[in-house]
Image 1 (cartoon, rainbow, N blue to C red):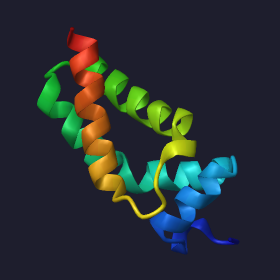
Image 2 (image 1 turned 135 degrees about the horizontal axis):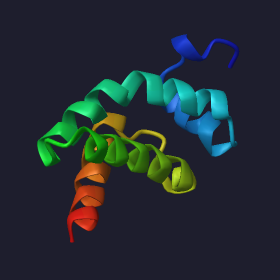
Image 3 (image 1 turned 60 degrees about the vertical axis):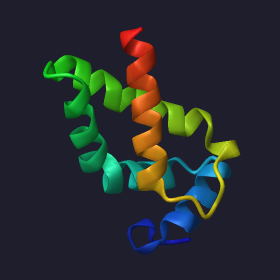
Length: 90
């Protein structure tokens, strides 16, 4: 997969499972805006929002081996940030 910017999310997930950090960076680039918007729902504090975003993307990388290839990354990140926010606020 030469050009990550034109790859599908499914292809990027597959590449991430192989440890491809460039594919991971492309996933982050594509989905960071949406994850940032979700973080705003949980805290008005910019630092807490940034922490939620960082933890969400770290969670993705650390669990990339269990991610199903056909999953919607939007759904995955929405669910992940909600779970992380709950843990952070517990």
